[in-house]
Image (cartoon, rainbow, N blue to C red):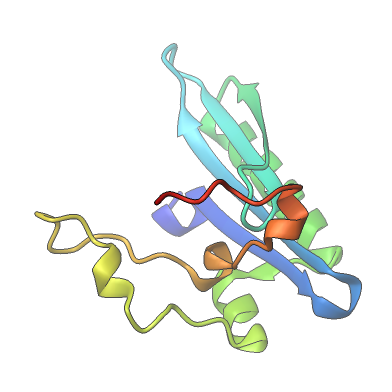
Length: 130
């Protein structure tokens, strides 16, 4: 099994339905020699939910990974590069500012995670600092 088959990130984005979802699948080894299929899903910008399924062999985990990926692709989810290209999602121009002080190759934030929050949605305005 190659590295591309172990991790898969899928998106389902439809602005007309106010839908912005992600689905992350990965196969990871367990401490006792088996394998696990780790699934993480939810709305883009949130932590989402997570479920871990344990398997005796890596082959069983790979088969479950393939079944779950096929199910999500049939339901309209697309691979990360496809979703970004079709929705014209780009990283911000000042992304270099978000790197750590000693981090030469830090991870740049994704534009989807950097949406502004309206104060009205939080219920109250924060106290101002003089």
